Amino acid sequence: MKPDLFGSRVILRSIQMNDIDELFEIYSNIKTMEFASDPVFISKDTVKEMLESVIRLELSGESFEWAIADRTTNKVIGTCGIHIFSDCGQSCGVGCLLNSLYWQHGYMTEALSLLFFHSKSWGIKILFADIDEGNIRSQSLFKKLGFEDQNGQFQRTL
Image (cartoon, rainbow, N blue to C red; front, side, top):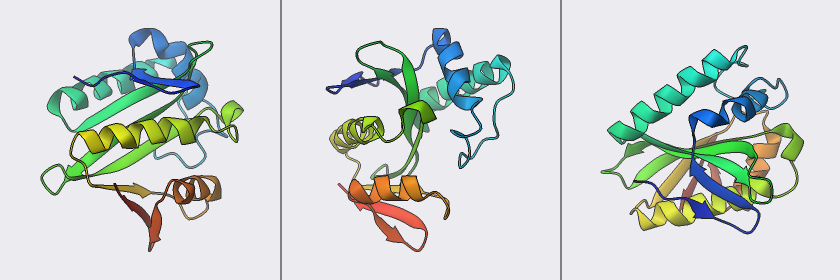
């Protein structure tokens, strides 16, 4: 079972069905979704389908996704997770999405730092992230977190 992870300003916790409104706020925002792999969500039903997929992938051990909640308000402001395990579970991909209203305030830096520390405790040694060429904000964030650009794929050894 994946634990809740506590930072000074954020909590990483399991995504719940009662998070649908806050997740829809994130996934329906054109600015937030500009570089996401999914299109902008047009209904809360799409969020419900996503949550059902998250549950299936976690049960199979293929992916683990956390809600990023503001510790003061408990509002879900983003998501982050690890997936695409390889090398006998020693390496995996990282994905994240943050409500654009919370950009440039250090929330994702804190959330990913918690995630990476926890990933190391699971025996993960290498993290990678595919970041679009035009997504300068995410590239800067991942470089700040110790990732190196390996021809368009960012990688970090824990």
